[in-house]
Length: 237
Ligand SMILES: CC(=O)[C@@H](O)[C@H](O)COP(=O)(O)O
Ligand SMILES: NCC(=O)COP(=O)(O)O
Image: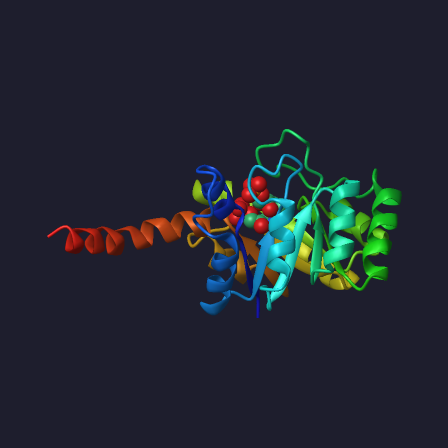
């Protein structure tokens, strides 16, 4: 069984574009859970261009499924996570100016930093995950940090799969097999979609959780727009 955690960053992006509270991020989180999502993911960035730190606090009492907070463990982020105690914290090595996450951790180079920050979160009862590229050395490095889980960075797979290259799954399957043998839990995310998720899941043994935002929100627009247009036309008769 693989849990679906819905990343609601995009809802905040839309809200921020008008400065008000539509769409309402907290209501959206409540709704996705009502509709069956098994987790809510947010990824606050230092510039707060989508999810704001205040959203993370506002969501705390409304997320009754798994609350997953992703981000680069700068001091402000670490303090917030320690205060909120979500189900899981996912560490992502974002550059300040990154449009979106674009690389996993170098778990070998940053081993000592990761050991320290992971210990602090685990000491506070928070499950940890680290975002990694599908590279066997990085999985071994992740094991040495003491993390509970890894999140496989799936952009390369999603891109290749979209071009028809199904063999792009191979390094992910190999990393998953290694992670299983090392007893590290496996999450995955980035550009997963209705198009590629079934194939991905079928080739990753013991995939515990996927976090999906960009495609899921886009697909919701496409799949909902016909209904909404009909509703407007009815009111305009
Ligand atoms: C960690 C990751 O893969 C990202 O997809 C992220 O959580 C989404 O961030 P943005 O919404 O800023 O693209
Ligand atoms: N951890 C990945 C995530 O939360 C969502 O990524 P995406 O679906 O927005 O690419």
